[in-house]
Image (cartoon, rainbow, N blue to C red; front, side):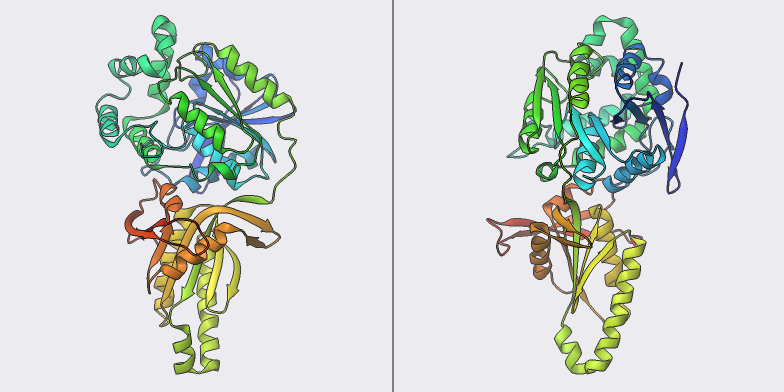
Length: 451
């Protein structure tokens, strides 16, 4: 019997979800874009996998926006929107603290949510994880640009067709090639999970997202599972993830299937059950979390005071502060502090911070002021209404390098804005006071409708 289907909205988008089981611990399966809640229970090996997890937990399932039974979307969403979807589902089912099980690109979402909302995450399980999908000098275990181009072209030309699925099953889940029934279910599941266009859009976001700088900010107890012969994500990727998350436990499993319910599913489930039921999530809560920090600074404030006089300047500054607070409210930013001619705010994601900075600059320009701004995503320490930490200091240094009317952002910000429509110009490598080495900065090019 299939569990009942329900919907919750995040803005205008309806998200499908189900709740199965009544165990003492809440578990959310974050499966990325390959999901369909209706067909999952018609797919025997997957249904057995889910039933086993629901046997020791209250299992929460959801289809990501754009896939399965959730609303289709025309444009791929930025990562903070996807994190908002996770929170909407957890709120709808009344789950204050949850263990997240990430599969495939769902590992990115799970790790980011755990870093951003440590108070909501009891523990983290990542299967077949990778922090980046495009190869670089210091991360060679990913595809290069040419391989990505070929892959995206193959999705456009063949997604969902039998020939395409069978060809790619040879490395996604080779075990299904020996089981015609399993293969037929995987073909149907792939077709019902996503259309060719939505599959390509999600892959483009995945290709451009890099969370390597985020991993050290994950403080939830973490289990990283990876099959030795996984051809989707090489074993080195899982080892890298486990090495960067503090105190993460890495378990290397035999097999070469990148799909957990194909091959030795029992080995995967044994590890998950032992971790979830064995005390994971008992770690004391932390006041450190991932946040995006925005600094704005009024250009030539001293000259304004001299030319206007103090009373007129104070009135203009009050108007500036009102503009900033209205923009923060629209963009879901959190006002932290105002120090003379500067403003400090935080956001749950970098795209919103960049758009907010852009909007503030436009609006204060109408009252005769010019700003500079800096944006950085990193770990902050939360103390009541205040935030502190290296991320705040680094953002202040970035802001100081910006010219009049300019927004500068860190590489971490650029790596977390895939799907936002924001592009970046290279602003060069800079020495930031108090920060070892040099840091590459970027200049966002915000679409005209960003405000």
